[in-house]
Length: 69
Image 1 (cartoon, rainbow, N blue to C red):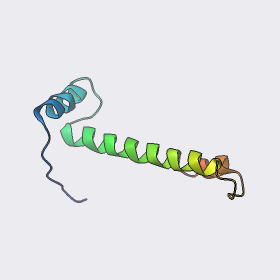
Image 2: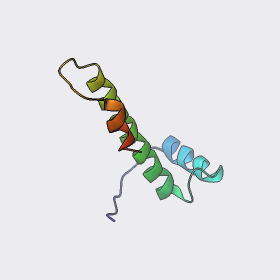
Image 3: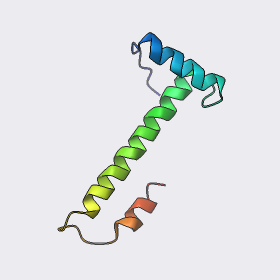
Image 4: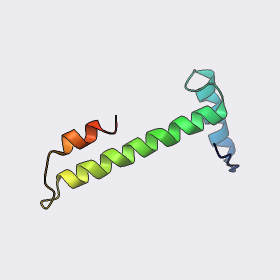
């Protein structure tokens, strides 16, 4: 696992700390990792939905979505 050091605003730090307090992660790093995974999943779904509307795509994209679960 790689470690990244990134600056965040005071508001973001308070938000992250709040997420830890309510149990959304075991620590600040866990909250950020979870947020990034959720962002990644959202991007995948967005791409699939866009492809579903593309007339040149063939096949059932719902089957493809199942592979990302």
